[in-house]
Amino acid sequence: MEEEKLSLLKADLSGQLKLIDAVFKKIARRKKGYAKNPQALESLAYQLHNLYCAFEDLFKIVADHFENQVSGRNRWHQELMSRMKVDLPGIRPALVSESAFECLNELLRFRHVFRHAYGFELEAPKLKLVLQKAQILKKIYKQDIPRFLKRLGGK
Image (cartoon, rainbow, N blue to C red; front, side, top):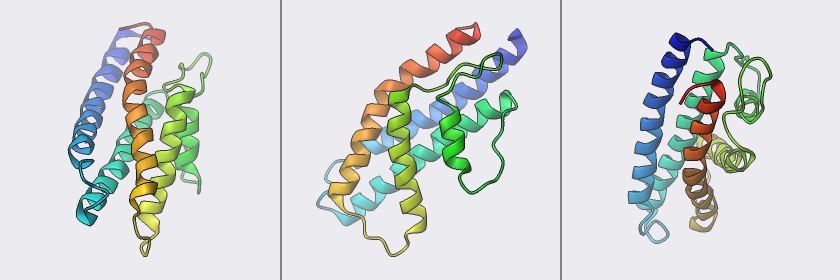
């Protein structure tokens, strides 16, 4: 990959990763006492929703950079995320590992419910699973992104 394109990609990824880190910090603050406080529960749920959206924006940056966009079909969110765990020989390496994908998949399912189930009551035990996946993801993605960049030929 030529240096200019790699530098631009790194800059775009860096900016998005800062946003992801900011969401993780909000999650850390909001997870205290969420099981007993409906407002804290809703605030945490909103940040978990935002976390998936921030990762999806990261995926869009990568897809756009390598010109492998996903069209506006019904399952484009799932297709975009699935594409990020796959090596595309001659195009780009996988962005995320299978472990990160599993966590992100749980966040995607939650995002869908959060956005579309208007009469849905949030429940602390169900949110706990999503929170656990987010906490696992926090450890994993910080290894996945540098690995991705290294495989592109730059670090």
